[in-house]
Length: 163
Image (cartoon, rainbow, N blue to C red; front, top):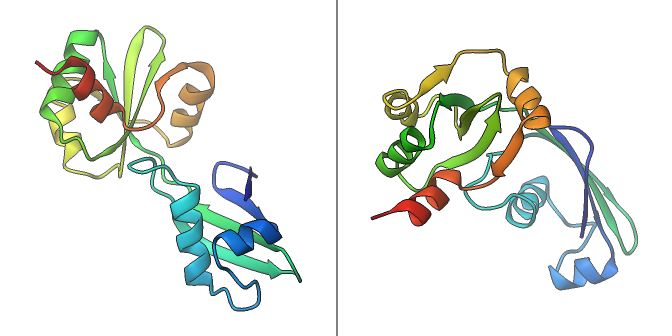
């Protein structure tokens, strides 16, 4: 299976004959629901940024399948921490099973969490400062900052710094 990222919210999946046999898929009988599950299980890492599929287009061939998948671009809630101690304390208090990334930008640690309206936001705001900004700012920070932990940041911080 080959996945091509078209944008922050669009993907193309190519499955050749070997892939179709491996996943026991018939290009003509694949439903959109099955295609969404295939995308989520083989492309989206566990506990990562959640993709909400808004549209899927299937183009079956004789021995291959191409899928266009469009997702809703869900920007995360962002929290800034001035030092590593604040960040570790916040991670220690948070549940492990939340989708999160850790970035470093302009001298601050930036924790991104999904979904943006989760109860975790209240907890993190006790340790850091919530960045109330337009959704495109996350992509700016992602592009110009340094990604320290792309997936499962809170879980990895808990495992690394637990007492």
